[in-house]
Structures are given as C-alpha cells and as structure tokens.
Length: 370
Image: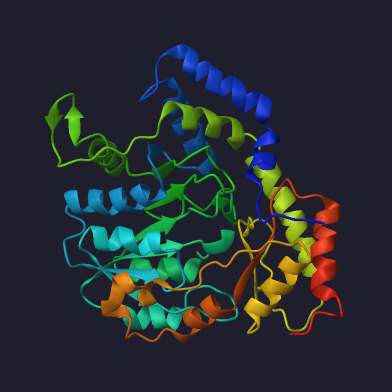
C-alpha cells in the first residue's frame, strides 16, 4: 500500500463539481478582484468564526504582518516593542514580527501539553512587552483563562495565529474569535484550503479591520487617496469562491479528522512513539497529527519503506534559523527537543479506513525496532 502524506487532488475531489461551478461563475462574471465572491466569503467566514469583521488578504503571512502593521498605524504598537511568541512555530509567525521592526520574545513550551509554559510566559514580560502572538499549532487550541488573565493583567494585545486551527473551539467560541484579532492562512493543505495562496484577518475591532483593508490595498482610504504607505495583498475572487464552497463542509471534514485521530490514539501501542495529550472534544481539529520519538529519522525511514509518507513539522525552530542568528544563542530546550523528535502521520478527510488501519499496523509491528 502507498499512502501519501497528503494528496490534495483527492481532497479537492470531495467537492469538485461545486468548486468547478464556483470558479466558472467567477470567470463568467468578468470581475476578478474586490467583488461579490470576496464580500460573500468574508461575511460567511466572519459569521462562522463569530466576529464582526473579516478581511481577506493574499496569504497567511500577510495576515500576520498586516495585523501588526495596522496596530502600529493605530498607535497601539511602536517599533522595538516586544511581542511574545511560542518557540515552536512555523517561521511565518516570527517573520511578521521582525518585518515590522518589532522584537520577538520566544517562550518555551510545556512538554506534556505542547502549550506555552505559563511560568516562562510570565517571567518574559517586561515594560516593553505589548502583545502575545498565540499560535494554535497542529490544530490544537492553546488559549485558556490563564492566557487571558496574563494578557489582561499586563495590558497586552492578544493576537491569534489561527493558520492551522480552522473550526477549532474553546468552550462555545471558535479560535479566531478569542483575542483582539486573529490571522488565518488558507494555504491548500490547511483544513480550509484554497487552490493557491489566500488568507484573512478576523476581529471585532472595526477600526482595525478598516486599517488592514486600507494597507492591503495600497494604503488607499478611497481611490487614489493613500492614508498609509500600503501594499498589494488582496484575496482574489477565484480563491474566495473556492473557500466559500469548502467552508460549508469544514465541520464535517474536521469530524472526519477527529475520527481518524481518535483511531490513532486508541490503537497505536508502540511504547517508543509518544502521542500528544488527548484534548477535549472540539479543541483540536487535527490539521497535523504529530508523534514524538528520539528515533524520529529511523521511524520515518521505516514507514517510508512500507509505503507510508510522513512530514516533519518543523525540524529547525525559528530561533535557530540562520536568518535569526542574533537568537541562535538562546536555549529553549523543550522546543528544541520537539523539533528533533516530531514526525507527522498522514491525516486528512480523504483517507480511507484501510489506510488508517495500515498506518497503525506498521507502527505497531514487531519488526520496527526503535
């Protein structure tokens, strides 16, 4: 059996007829930017997340960068301010901070929960700390009352990086509606994925939304009148139409992801492979299913020899990247260990029961020596 990590063609095929019709409608309309499809998706996604506003942008990195930039334009952040950020995240989260000449303050992780180490978070706050950029990594909700209390007591902006957690919940609210603003990526492999790059910002702050929308459209407040030094970062009509189709099925596909994940949890029995702590219903939408082992490379090679493709998220944490050499001396031991040990198993709504069972069988087989 051959099991790709993710076969996007099969995922897209789940709704192929509707997607093709939606694209054809855009092509036939003759309107390809800033039209009805974008407006409709923004409204539907805001309603889904539970916020007043949604601003479509070109990609997830731009969503992060524009949000921080907008707060600077509004006077809520200034160059050199410190932004707290988890040490185990995709580099885009940190790029958005440094692009705006803000300073990332890396916070190590709790090894058992994969969430922020709350004591490390508290100790990192200084008079220059102005925001927490909270990342719902792997599809796991990392927000709770303790996080909110820390932000409230220190007057910090709480910005969610919701790139991997579309549809995830904290109690009765969705991630993307928990902080002051939230940034979303619709990269094709995400739970809600476009057929190219796309992103959005959700917020209840209408002034923030309007500032982001302006900066993303050359800084215009109205045509040819530039209030800000802007850029071009607009969600296009085709991607908005595709996302609007797929949004209708997001909860259903997330439930399939949860079913697969629970099957993994209930049946993977290899003591050398550590699974993350199982979270409550709805608080993990399993964008990525990570397992951890000191023998990660050996496990990956063995699975590949049996036709099972895996990925590593992420082998080098941001503070150890060459482009951030000024942070290379920092020691963040848990994040560094996770980077050495993490392996992502196949998990997507197009997987069959037979494929899931085969992954479990191979991980549990006695010939696998770790």
